[in-house]
Every structure is written in C-alpha cells, then in structure tokens.
Length: 59
Image (cartoon, rainbow, N blue to C red; front, side, top):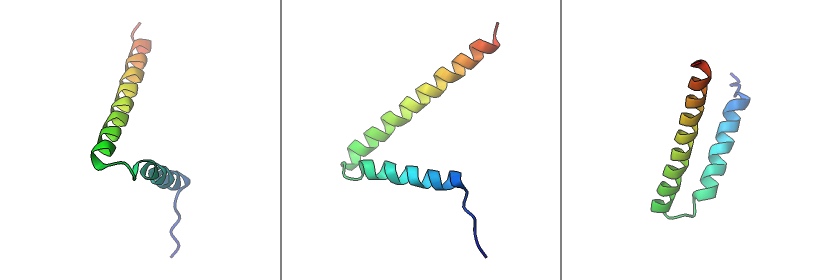
C-alpha cells in the first residue's frame, strides 16, 4: 500500500522544520517568548483582517 502525501502537508512539515531550526539553539524561556510574540502578531493580523471584512460588509 502506497500512501500519497499532499503537497500542502509536505509544505507544512518543511515549514515546521525551518521554524524549529531557527529557534532550536535559543534557551527555552526565550523560545517561548519568541513563539508567544509571533502568535500574538498573527492574532492581531487576523483581527485586523476580520475588522476590515466586517467594515466592507456593513454599509
């Protein structure tokens, strides 16, 4: 049985590997801080996009 892995899944695995490689040598506390800041930036971006989409719908 041959399992076919989607291109999207491979891209996710590659992204995770690059993300890990970029922070693996940083102390644990600093890694957590870095990850939390990155997540917060993503959350903020999502909120801005949602607000923008809502403003476009509301006339």
